[in-house]
Length: 195
Image (cartoon, rainbow, N blue to C red; front, side):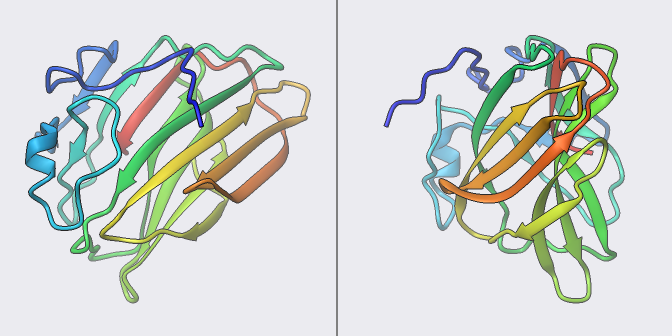
């Protein structure tokens, strides 16, 4: 299977230099470890592109943004785009309260959120879920495993005519598909990280 990239961003050099929208990292929870460091963690090594990845060291109660962004993601009205990355949730990831947070957003050039990939954690059961939605928060979720890498793929058809679609694939299988979405405008940037 080949994965042709029309747009490709990674974290070569151990930083966010290839991402051109300002980094937001109050509390310094973002870092960009080398693959040799990741390979020392039980359950790794991971599928990757490049020798570095982005890591967010979340702590319970943290409400700050820890993100990088790229303004070179241009999805015109009526166009379809595809995104693919590996995602790992630590086995000891927990929450002190129920929470929903975005991990990837497709936004207009001005920052208005059009499509969201996010996660939800239920404190009482420690259940972790991943979901997608049209706008600032996911509307549909499925369970997400801890302690192993999952290939996350997104297919987004942007439409100002209420025929947009947004599909989430996990490890190659369709997990959630949303249809008849109505975006306000074309997509001009992407934001990756926890919000």
